[in-house]
Length: 231
Image: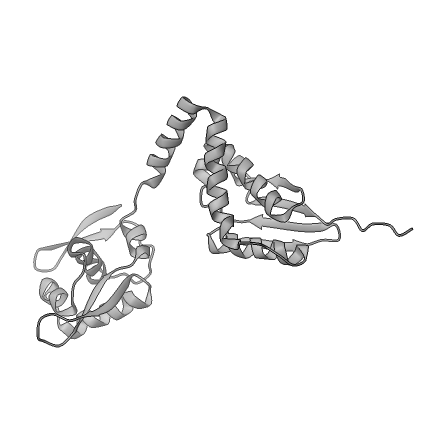
């Protein structure tokens, strides 16, 4: 959420109520605000709009670029020298100008469940898991290698997965659930996740706890196949 703050010469600068980035000065946030309004801009344009030197604008832009908040590309404008043009990254968009995807998702899923039933809702979550795990392709190797491949995939997707090997099997934990709010309302999200892990590994996967029911993480146990006895 943003609040207005007055700073020098009667200018009003929008500031975040709770800064997620340390050392984000009013000038730096003003640059973010302007790039949001303009779509993109040069250091010269920003320096004129903020009444600061071009060198100072570049210093702030370099800092914002280091934080992953702005990106730059070179554009040729007319017959002059190519110019560096700055724009916001997806990280800055989400951090300072958040979208409300959750409201739309809840509304859509509620309508699906109401009109088509829980079975159709489960189909939707299954398709979501298929698209997620489909990036792995054909998972080969030992059971440990396959479980590690899954842990790596889910970590890349924001689940912060960790893997622990025990004498009897493997414990796969997800510290973060990117769709936790949805999973709390629609248990089909968790059912589809367990099904997807079982399908990929080709052996039963047992859910031990879930964030959607109040646990600190989602944890699955994958049992090692028992060795066949000789003779």
